[in-house]
Amino acid sequence: MALSASVPWRIHATLPRSRANGPGERFVVWTQGCSLGCAGCFNPETHPAGSVAREVANVVREVLATPGIEGVTVTGGEPLEQPEALAAFVAGVRRAGLGVVVLTGFSRAEIATDPALTAAVAGVDLVIAGRYNRRLHLGAGLRGSSNKEYWDRTGRYSAAMLSAVPEVEVLIGRDGTVTVTGMVAAPGGGGQ
Image 1 (cartoon, one colour):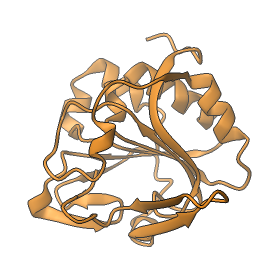
Image 2 (image 1 turned 135 degrees about the vertical axis):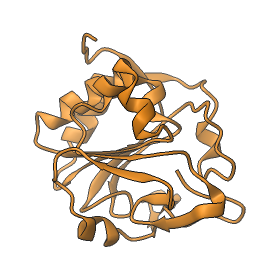
Image 3 (image 1 turned 90 degrees about the horizontal axis):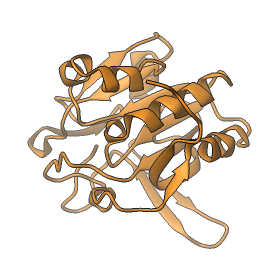
Image 4 (image 1 turned 30 degrees about the vertical axis):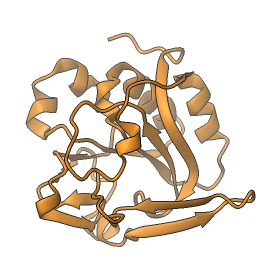
């Protein structure tokens, strides 16, 4: 798969600083589009595929212009439903030495048997894989449910680092916008 920074990427939202979406202070990207439809998903507004696409290069520039971050977390929606864009993004931020965590509903086995999905996570430090199961809700350590598997690809993040990630974070923007993020379920919701 040829990697190009001009690849379009459907993005739901970005957040330049978060501590509840991975170890350390992180930039977070929520992708738009998910056909998995896990019951109780925390982010159902990210499921429809439609949205304005951004070029991967523009998102990479936004990340690299954010000082003092340890890494990036990509969640969704479903990041692996746009594998070429994810691979290009990961390549762009890895060149700057940033760590990368990807939360996906695909299982490790599904990723390993699909060449496009395997290529999309080739440069990722940690993949948190598996469908969200609300009966097994956990909401800790970046796992929405206990069936979700840590796929440590580089050893960058320890179990202690993951268990220290806050379960929820409330951020108030300069314009008064309130953002609640993390793994604690909203009423009737779940997790990624």
